[in-house]
Length: 306
Image 1: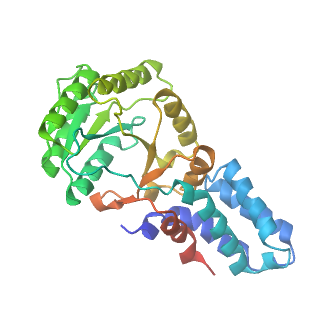
Image 2 (image 1 turned 45 degrees about the vertical axis):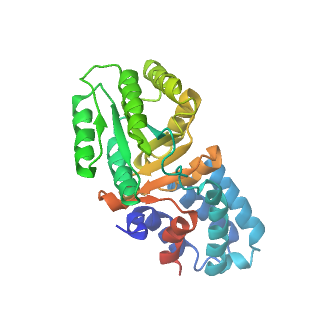
C-alpha cells in the first residue's frame, strides 16, 4: 500500500477539511483560522504542535493572503515539515562483521503490533543483506513465542526461545551470547506487551537491559517503541512512561491506515523529538515504511490541494 493510500483517513479529515474550508472565507480570516485549528486538533495533531502551526500561519500569511488556498497550504506544508524533519532519522545500522550484534529492543503496550513489526523489520533487513536473529523475550504468552517463531521461519532467521513463564532476561542473555558467537549483525528482542503503568513489568525491562550490558555495555543500541496510531493522544502518555522507565531512541507508528488521527505524529515530534524510524500503513510486509518527513507531509496535503 502506498503512503498516500495508507494515510487516506487522516488526509480526508485534515486536508479534505481544509479544501472545503478555505474557499470563500477570504473576508473572514478569523473564521478560517478557527476552522484550521479545529481540523488540526481533530486529527490529533496535539495542542502544542497546533499552537505552533497556527502561530506560523498567522505570521506567514497576511489577512488578505489567508483567502488564497494555495498560500494557506504552502504555509501549513512549511511548518509541518519544520516539525517533522528533526525526527526524520532512519535507523543507522552498524557495519557488517562488527564483533557484537547491533541489538534492537522492541517495547510497547499490548496490541500495538510489536511482534508483527519485528517480522516486517526482519524481512527488510534480510533483503538488505544483514544477518538477523530474534529473541522471544515475551515469555508470558505462549502464542507470542509461536508467532515470533513463525516469523523466524518465514524470514529464515534463528529464534532463541524458552518455555512459557521463563525469565525473559535469561532468554535475552542466551540469545545475545549465541548471536555474538555466530557473528550475527542484528539481534531483535521481543518483549511482553505491557501497559506503561505496570511498574513491575517496566522493572523487568530494566533487568533485560542490565543483563545485555554484561555482554555488551552499549546494548541495546536501539530501543524501539511501537505505538498504535489509532490510540491517538494516549500515545503521548505511553512515550512519556517508556522514556522515563527505559529510555526510547526510536518510534514505530503502526496502523496509520486505520485511523483519521495520524496527526499524532506531529504531537509526538513536537513534545519529545524522538526519531520516528518507521510508519505502518497496511498489513503487508512492504507496508512498514521508513519514515521520511517530506513524503509524509506530501501524502497528507498534496492530493487534497485545491
